[in-house]
Length: 233
Length: 406
Ligand SMILES: Nc1ncnc2c1ncn2[C@@H]1O[C@H](COP(=O)(O)OP(=O)(O)OP(=O)(O)O)[C@@H](O)[C@H]1O
Ligand SMILES: [Mg+2]
Image (cartoon, rainbow over the protein chains, first blue to last red):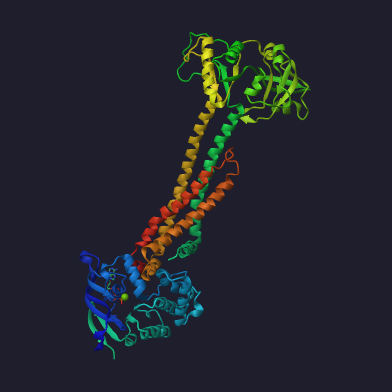
């Protein structure tokens, strides 16, 4: 395998995550080891409650592990403070959520501009890049619409545009098509494929085998542990 | 993020809930307007009192027959004789070399409720018998005709000078100069009319008639004790010195001491300063009440911002997930809170200035500029202060928990 010559984009070693204390402690992750290289398209599968979202939140620097280490591009994320985590998310990661998570009462264009604004990009350049990103997801004619004026599929495409506008090293998608019909699902998955071809690393959580089929590698979780790790093709 | 951007995010937060924002702004508005108006009312009433004392003449000192004693029963001077206040007393004050701060003196004998009649119209007024210096001491310029003279006092001339109230009551629009006004059975020739002075407290300063002392004593009151002696100090600043000189002279003549005086000396400028300090207390109290309402308005801001932070927890989570740091979130909510308070502050200043144009409880408010600036600045500070707790709460939300919030 020539994969081994590539630099890993992130590594989890013996990562655990537990919620609560005492008798009510929930062990959502029980020692996960995972190395993902640049340009991989990883699908995470597993039953409900198996710890998929928990793992993705750690990968996305939204949450920190209870024990074990998580390294992103050589940085030990566990040692970072709040603001440094914000910076890491802004610079390296794009998120797509099952429930879209657009900012309400804010136009599609402004939503897409937001990560660039937090990065300090000038207004003019920002606008231009946001318009391009919206055009790339086929929504250039909806840029002045607010989320409640868009269909679910359109909202998710705006969310994809927002995740991609910063050209992130890693794109994380937690059941991005869970709330969409087949047509909209295909739209979104095709956008992910195109992003992958462009060189990004993608991590996608899904319940559906057809969706997982598009990935280059599929891991399966059970009770907070990886029990299967396969490469397609 | 640039300042303009933070501002426009804050503004859209404020506009997202117009009614709620408007009510919060109203709280601040009422507080700021109350501070401005109530302080203006206090200030206005203190100026009104000062002005009415000024009308009586701030240099004026009044020596009155009889003593005012505070506390103690029975007066405590049963053995002493009450000496009359006489023209000789007045002469003594005027001519003494020990009274360098006294400028003018006028003995006064008043007859109250004297009915004055002309051409069948009659009106009951206070007839004052005195010397011409009284006009100057009591700040009574004539607007028409002349004063009576010292010669009139010596000869007991039946000349009289009347105030505006007497003119309107008796003469209406007819010119009184030269007419014969019959007061208490004695015919007087009207030689002058006093300029209008208005009222001081409940006293109508225009309801007067003034005639030579000798004439009044001879025809109406008799020659008993004077009612009072009006004295003018050389300036308002020397009034207290003049008051002490009068004590020394009269104590010598009446064989009295501070404890046994049969007369009293009232100094207008000391009344002025007492009333001014009372009014200051009054103004401070009014201001304090208003400041409390401003504080309540500030708590309204905290309240509404807390609601807003809770409501928008998920939005804050999204913003943090895509890279907003603490400071960005903090400033967004601080700007929002400050916008509310600044809008409330500006509107409060406008309303306060408008309301202060009208009389309130009989007082014409007089704006104190420092209260306007102060109320506005405090309202801005209130936004920052009362907004900082909710803003901090928003900024320190953990993104993962905020995202999970329903
Ligand atoms: N904030 C939390 N507090 C307590 N327990 C939690 C919390 N978040 C997750 N868990 C628990 O951790 C376990 C893993 O949850 P996780 O959300 O990762 O599941 P998942 O694999 O994403 O499931 P699904 O497919 O339903 O989304 C579950 O048992 C869940 O109850
Ligand atoms: Mg999940």
